[in-house]
Length: 454
Image (cartoon, rainbow, N blue to C red; front, side):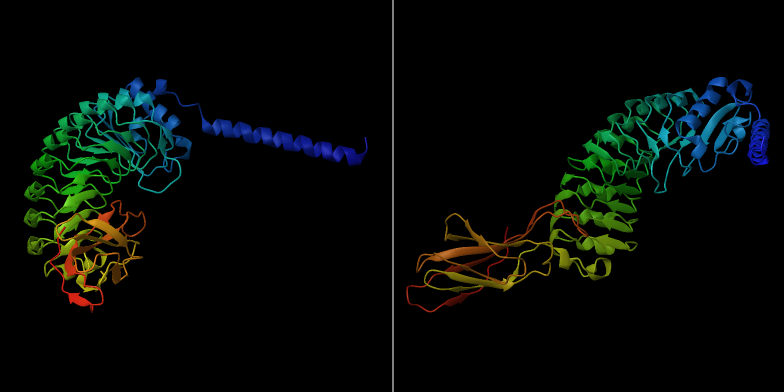
């Protein structure tokens, strides 16, 4: 055999031998494969539940997996706590879990804390539904599955968790109604369902949660009115209902929540006046009422809240505010859909030329609508202006020497853009004026405005 042929063959044989030795050493270093049969620290079923959690949620990619499926002492594994020979807590927050939650978690009968929250912005996360079997964990005090991609409805079986103090399912893709049975969790202190796709009304039964401190339901598709009965939650410190489709008035009874520090009702479809009783919220430092369809005056009682640091009433149809508003919400007036000021009329023989001062809020499109009627008749819309920056409009086609009533109101359409994210089409009150057209050939006559009316 030629030397040129022997050299490559020798090199190949040496490489193969070296690779075999490396693989053999690696296998020896890894040791025997983990099995729950070798675990004596906790019951077999509990060990298998932990093993299923690791496997189902891609444990190999966890940020910290110290001890998992390596040692035979699960109580020393990262995030696992045991009491009296049973798993009592699993705390794996921000640990890069990805995949469905296994049904075997229902075997952890002594579990008091299951905290798998992902507060970081990562791709993936937990998927699938919330296992109904979690409802059998009757010793559970904390269930925190926030910040993932969980889908489906909230299992009715969670109504059985009588010891539960914290239920946080925020920042998922859960749908359907909020189970009314959650109102039976007498020990619940925090209910976090923010940032899901929940629909239907706020269950009246939640008013039974006498120990509740935080009710967080923002960024869903909840409809209906705010239950008056929530005013009985005497320990409530945070009521956050932002960005839903809640309608009707703000219940004046919310002023009874003497411990409330944060009230966020913004970006809904609430109507009517701001209740004066909100001035009784002596502990409040944040009140958000913006981007609704509220009208009337901002109550002066809000000026009496010494601890109030932030008040936002922007993007409503509020007509006036007390002297404290420049400190609490300096730009409030620039965002209100209100009737124009200084309405005047110059009458001709067959027309009336109207003029006014445009409102400060001229953004987000919109216009002024002009309607008229012969005195005592039925109002008809004559037309609209090009924008909210317009300052005049001429009503034509009128009969000579006839008294007319004319009115102007402002319109702002719904718009899903920053900063308002306004889902309501807003109409202001009317600015009204009377004018009498002149006989043919007469000079124009100027008329002063009437008071605003709806």
